[in-house]
Image (cartoon, rainbow, N blue to C red; front, side, top):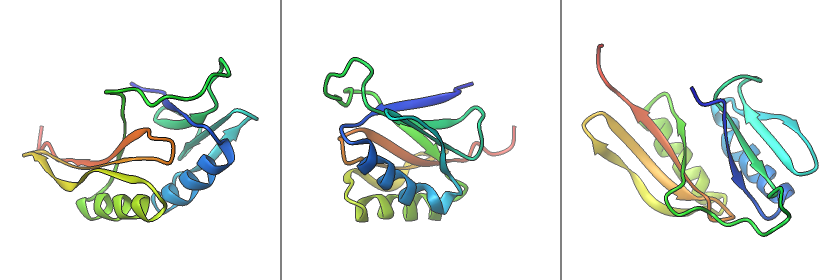
Length: 126
């Protein structure tokens, strides 16, 4: 189980404003923060998302192949969240669509180039 995932940013205030606005419709809110890190989630437990200024003081660099994915309740929510990200200045990395029979996703890069995905997984009955 993932406790949290973190992406590096170049401007913590700008990134916090972006993610606070983007994730609010999902009930995700800023939780704990410091001068270099901000955690977001529905509560202080597993499944949180964090933004941070890199600990080593060097510039942030989005990792090639690294991505954080945020689960949505419906395909409509995937669509809405993707479009909101784009409206807030994110860039498209793959418009909303069915990727596999059980996976619907939409991909974008945030203001610092970090790749994220909103998705809805439907595995049917177990």
